[in-house]
Length: 201
Image (tube, rainbow, N blue to C red; front, side):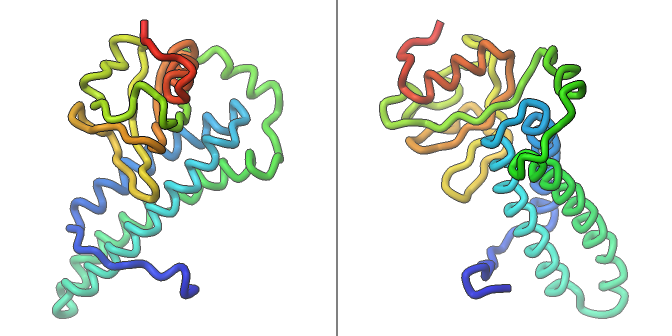
């Protein structure tokens, strides 16, 4: 591992780390397919960012397991934990492989893309600009699901991720929202996030 890639160890319980790995890998799969089917570089880039998070969690689990193993019997019992973490990491790697198709401009056959153009819900990334009405508002206050039919399923703040954020989560300038919703709602979300649109319907 290069000097710049050193991972800072933080005390996270194995259960918490495994749960987050599961949640993140599920989002990655959805994002990866959406990025390929709709040829979206921005979604593919978020898949790559999420892969870094899964790699970090896998590393932390390995460290926790090594610290917890006191003898051969402990090590044997903990093997199941590392096996699940490794398998989940492989899922995230596969999602990243799909995203790489988009970023490398390999492309998806038009027939495949056309078959999925009719999906009712899509995933999208929206970056919060300084003059957006979202700034310093909580998700509960905004009521995006009720007003524009969009659910925020994750928030990236620099390198920190908040998966399935609750209503009390406040949106800050430069946050990256990962949202799911109907195409018209997604378009409105992006305009609101960019500051181009000031009022929700």
